[in-house]
Length: 318
Length: 169
Image 1: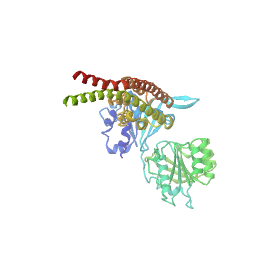
Image 2 (image 1 turned 45 degrees about the vertical axis):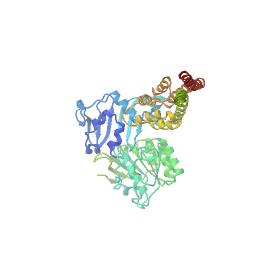
Image 3 (image 1 turned 180 degrees about the vertical axis):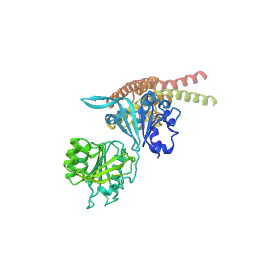
Image 4 (image 1 turned 120 degrees about the horizontal axis):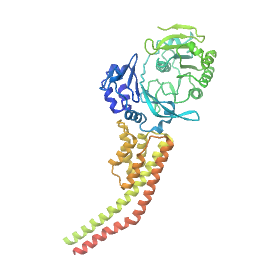
């Protein structure tokens, strides 16, 4: 099913007709549709941005753009939630809703706090529809560098700023390892806290991860890593966007249990990581033997460099 | 001979009309009971499983017997992707589907639609329970009405038929 067909049920009917003139090539390159209350609707592509014109299609002129009104925003929220806000309490607390096909609707509004913690969001002012695309075999060129000279997988940390293709790469690494593209197939456990890697819906992965992946969906990473370690005897654990002390402790625990870990983190370079206490501890404990720095320089997933546990450059990207 | 056949037909017709009125009262009582069962199922789906409304309404329909049409029609309106709110879908469903209930009962159901799905779980549960309790009172009233008027309607039916036959003879 095309991305347009997957995403249309969540877009207000009045906006669907404005998006219909988009060509298949434009849909192919579309990464985000940003709906901000009383502002022009914008579309972000790989390397540029355009607005949805009032007459339909795309325009570069914000004056010709369709302005999102309150009714359209309300309709969008009703469609995203299936008119069931009570069923999305956790999603509203986290600030995003996972849609079929692995797409995601990020939400902004006014946070409601209870005891200092975000309980929910209200007065939603912005919805960012992030379109997910599975790119199969994107990790094939990188994969050999993640194995040591004895053909053992090295624990790996993918490092990049947002929108550089970490999750897409992580997903394909999981798929290739489970399929045994380079070595024998491995049992892969995925802690998918944000439902981004597998986009589980109703217990079924919306994206292809092969037949040897156990997916723990919506579970906090630190707890999930330990749960998978104890219950599913994985050979490789995969998780996205680590960042807390608890995540780091769980990763070290997993590494000490003889399980390889492939994870991702937000940073522009290895040096930035070393300056952050959580990652400094992980680097000191040599929890990762490979660090892969990514960017969008030549499109999402551009490998800028592969480093070892001592942050020595093993291979420079192109 | 024709007189006898005519007399029998008159008595049968009047008895039928009397029974029809009695049956209407009974149907209202049964329908109100089944709607409560549907709302109980809706409460369970919302409270225990946080099931989204379209699926929760379909589950409720399975428990709602004759009242199921209101729940399924509202669920269909919600999933057809036109961006209707749950309140609009439920109100439209009540208006379009005839149930064997009174207009006052219909108003109780319509009150459920206001704010349906648009607040947290606790609030939704309170709202559904309140409507269920109001339907329970209406059912008790319908039961009482049937107990007192059901027999009367049945007896009035054949009695009027017999009187008419006597008048014509």
